Image (cartoon, rainbow, N blue to C red; front, side, top):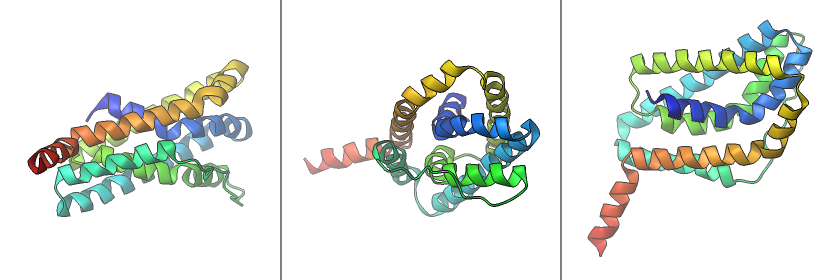
Length: 192
């Protein structure tokens, strides 16, 4: 379990949602927002882990390293899929969960899948615990600073660029750590 990679991945994937958390925390109770956000993260990470385990059963790790291209692609993809969900419900929990899943599901699955490859079930359990603690900490920090205008301004101004930089770094890490780049370089060298 690589704590720094998990932290960077979590922050990069959820950076755009942090702004939405500011609004959700003003509208709904801390308990509803916190619980829904933790459940959403656990759900998406579990789906990523299971998908990675299935792929790993059929393909060697170095080939799966090509999945590192996904975060890099997402960093340079220029469309606005992250619109607010149209969730019709009276339950604050369901509204927050639906909003989180609609905003972050694609990125979460695409980015966490290559990061969670090769984790054992025990390590994945520790990863889920760590991400849950990180999720709770982020919500509490955002709740504490929700009234500070400069925080919102900084995220609004630099958030997108920071998120894209993190995606590229995560993608490069996966490409190199899996051995994919090494295999490609060896293959190219054998052709020459």
